[in-house]
Length: 458
Image 1: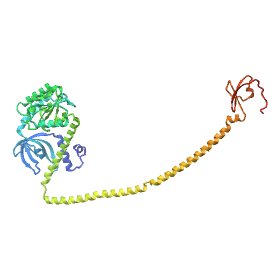
Image 2: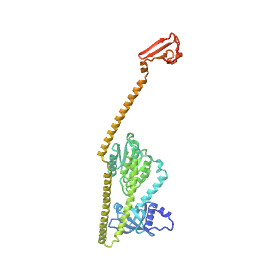
Image 3: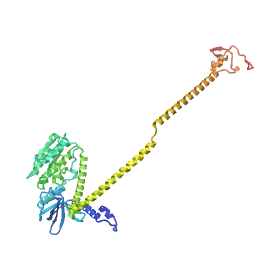
Image 4: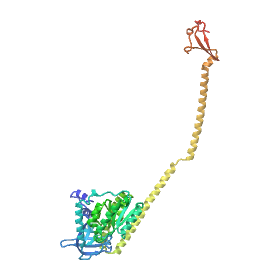
């Protein structure tokens, strides 16, 4: 149940305590971003799981803290009772006990806070000048003709970047600009190297520049927080990708650059031409999922630590768990056998029905042959009848044909001028040409005289 769901319910609704605690924990994690909190260490304990549990306090208040082993192993020192420290933490709640606590991600001694204040002051100043404006930043080339790398030749970050570029884009030329990345006056040297890279641009074959180094404390990374480097990065004609430190490290150079990468390897991936946008989105989703899964595992680990302190007899608990496990195994075996048995019975039934309804191919083939023979016989008899009918019609046609009439001694008179047959005696005129058709041919005649007969007899 989410906080929005809780607010939508009426005042008479009843919810479990666990649901309420989960909603409060979710609301705290959404409402409070990662924040640095200072105080004095008290009640420091390292559990068997190697997680740190302690409180930080001042004269007016205190807050319980937990730092899981996954992050505690990277801490530069182990806090002791009475130490003044600053913790970078997420405000959350330990749900089983309903206690507010800080989920610590990083810890440092209090002296480092002055550098952080200087970092915030310079960041606010440059941001007010528009040095970090989004409209000033340029998009990276999709297919760079050349990639410049600015870092120390001895830095492990250089090897990581070169390895990544060789794997993702071996066809793109790489130019390395050696420069120190730690120490006094390093910011000015880095700025001068950026200006030199812009002046040379390697015969117009360089399209993007990576400024990178490995992780470290805020003092180690301070060269990348100097104003001269930030201004040189913003004024660079080449797009600049900043890959300084680890994912949680932020410097002024990151804000001034056209694009900030979480690590030097990440910077190499961002400028590589292969599936840049897709991989960037995938990396963001993967990081969010990893953080969510990590917090869930951390909550489970903390719950396990709390439950481990409530154990009365581990041997008895293990014995009960073994009995429960055997019961579950028995139920699982029975549940697994039942679907197999039902499936076999269903298969047998389907097979029986299929065998009953399966057609007899041989019998059907013989039936088709018999039908074919009957069709052939019927077609043959019909053909004979049609032939006989045609013969009869031909004979009748021969009897009625004009040629047979001519053979019996009759003739046909045709008017030569009009081409019409003459049927009446009064159509015969003297000196009129006629054509006479006989059985064995025709003749043209000219009438000399015509004497019509009154009788039709021959």
